Image (tube, one colour):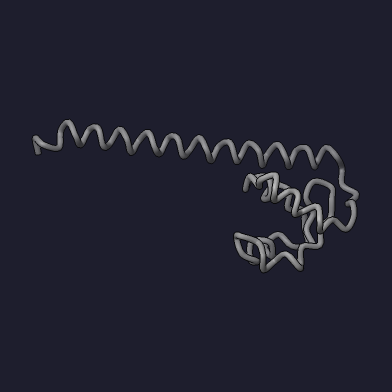
Length: 104
């Protein structure tokens, strides 16, 4: 089982169908996986599939749930901005090589 937000899911039967492989789910089994789930940026379809495995509700402080969700969203936003920076640096390096590469 895993917890996402304040809901408990028994995803045992889904392990072999998970696109990232069963080990990703097993790494967060038995604990709150909200941060990891949100960080990955699951689609609406993935969220619908998850509903099939809902078995209950966990008694978790709502403030903790909100904080974990904020952290995950901030982490996800940071990783996409890192991609933009890396893409920019590659483009800059290519431009410098194009300008000065012939002189070397």
